[in-house]
Length: 313
Image 1 (cartoon, rainbow, N blue to C red):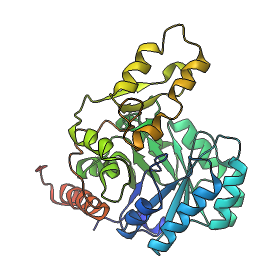
Image 2: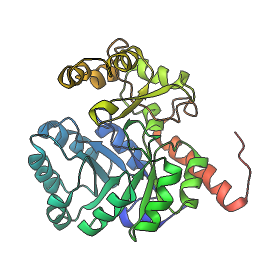
Image 3: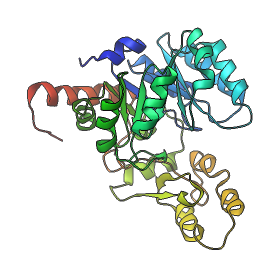
């Protein structure tokens, strides 16, 4: 079994995090990933403190292994969510949309490892100075909110820039991606899109079928006009957003157009849904238990890294 310093840092068997996907990464999915030896992560993106705490409790009831939580550092009640996380004491908190420096002492005093997402080497160095235990270098191949650098270019530069462990994310879905990430200097991977097809993931059948049918050109990036680019599957919603994004529509109207689109995707609304997915959609073509996904990724990666084996589909 491939083990790295990330396994020791977090207390997991396989060096893999499940991405904290907004409105998707619930307690059931997180528990399945953790029970299988990775780090399952509950998303705190809903902003509802009681709902987030409830999903963390669900995960804790389903597994005794380490659980993480992901928080986006923007919103009206971030202080309240951050305090709740400190009380719940998950093994890890991953962060996005800003620096976690404000909450670093509180979380670390509670014994929580703080691991921010960095879209550039400069951000990674900033987070290291703030006291982060590791960083997630996430390339623009990922689903959801993205940066400009690709994973292949970003990961080695972040590894060179910081002395703390680096986790690679963005466009990783199988053993080839995991092996490549480790060869680039990362000590582990974060995977989102492939876990959308975990049997334990609660998204709609419509969403899962779209992922299964997708290919390498099935995603599109929208939202650059507002400074928040998002990668999703091509859909009625994304086509309409692309059509109006650079018209005379106001920023406020454009923002309003996207309200509720992620929730609509989760429930299978093909007309209004924004179906977030990374560029590995063409690799993800079947539904599997989370444990099988993790085992398959690392069996493939180990064969490639230790045996000099060529990739066999």
